[in-house]
Image 1 (cartoon, rainbow, N blue to C red):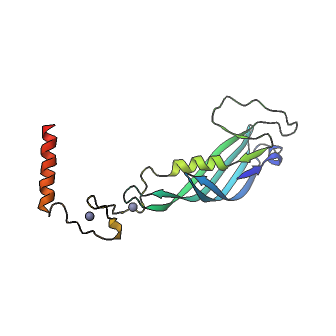
Image 2: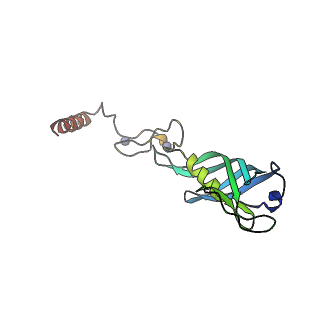
Image 3: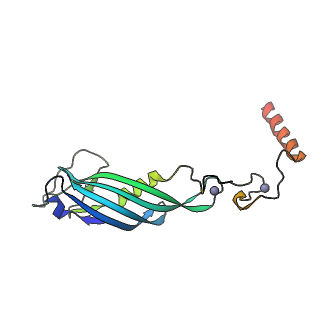
Amino acid sequence: MRINVSQQLKSPIGSMRDYELSELVDIAGSTSKVEGEVRLMRTDRGILAKGRLHTEVEVTCSRCLSLFRCPLALNIEEEYLTTADVVSGARLSLPEELGSFTIDEHHVLDLTETIRQYALLAIPMKPLCREDCAGLCPHCGHNLNLGPCQCLSPGADPRWFQLSKLVTERKGTE
Ligand SMILES: [Zn+2]
Ligand SMILES: [Zn+2]
């Protein structure tokens, strides 16, 4: 989302504006709709953007490997620094802060990259399609969320017992 903040940059420090946001953002290879509210506040160095946003991204369940839509809540808070004087248009020297967000020379503040970065951080390391996802059968790969498979439990099948004994013996000789 791109917002022209030239008017707000002329306002006194502390002045606020609220925006409703509904945007398609490219997150982790798929396009996700991001919605919520953003409040922009004039600071001495630029604009502070604060927002509560929500979206959904498509991820792979770490247990059953199925794709599902994972809801994400994003609490954004970033200060965007001015790069040009709003009255004269003269370029300002930026503070030596690497990685800080900036308002471009046309006084446009772009929230897209901020949203993308917050969303990537909000995606769980090991996503689960549901809290009690049953995962895949380790023997036949059947998705156990869809019901039990034909495999017998390892303890009940003597062949599995032989196999596990073999593996244990091998480990012992290594
Ligand atoms: Zn799952
Ligand atoms: Zn199975």
